[in-house]
Amino acid sequence: MDEKMNNIVLVPTDFTAVGDNAVNQAAEAAKYLKYKVVILHVIDKSTKSQLKKENLTEDSIHEKLNFITKKVKNDYGIEAESIARKGSIFTTISDIAKEIGANLLYLGTHGKTGMQHIVGSFALKVVTSSPAPVIVVQKRSFKDGYHRIVLPVTSGAGPLEKTKWAAHIAKQFNSEILIYQMSDKNVDKAVKQIAEFFVKNEVSYTIEVAPKSSNFEKQVIDYATSNNADLIMIMTDPDQSFKKFILGSWDKQLIFNASQIPVMCVNPRKLEWRKIVSY
Image 1: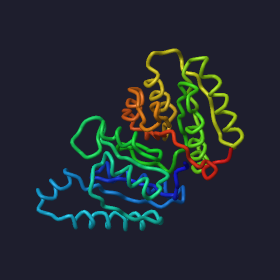
Image 2: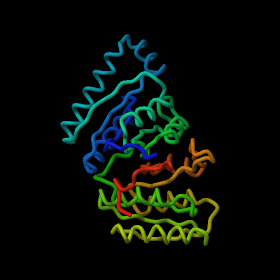
Image 3: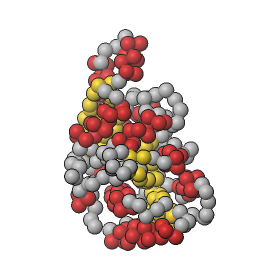
């Protein structure tokens, strides 16, 4: 069954500097995509503990969200609204994404360590439970769009969905796709299919084959950094039941890359692609 998509970017915030950056990047992207932004705060045990510590009520959460939403509207000239929902970030974020039919989710992370809401393995759990692609951002600011997108290709498994999202983003931001292929003959066919799709959809691209190495994730990060990439796009792996998604160790290294390049994670879904990009 196709997921319903409503041209919405969902962005959770924990009201930290990283959360603020995620909101700003989501708003900037929404402006390009002509989407609405929905700003979410999950009221969990950490929130309640902080409120108690500061002698505040939950009304203060709504006040913060209203302030951020108003600022986003004024600064970016886009439609925006906010939601505060009691729950857990592990389930509530994905539940809200499904409920509102979000096309895209932005997630701020403080990296692998820290004590904030969305950190390390917490972020990974949110990524793999999301019904929509997730763009994970660190502290690096958004710079007027995604002009150079690195698309690593490691196998022939599931390239079409990631390719369609890459084409969709590229068309919206007038981007160039940098296909970075693992040195493996078995990958050649997938890369050929990706290239043909980009040609058909008039997407600018280049292809480069990585030198043989046992550390492809480092090669991808170095390649993205040296080419001033604005985004890296990866796809999670579904389990056999297709009910959950798995991030490999190399995916995690990409997500938390030291260059702080945003990473778009796509969970394989049966989406109504005719609404996204032509075949």
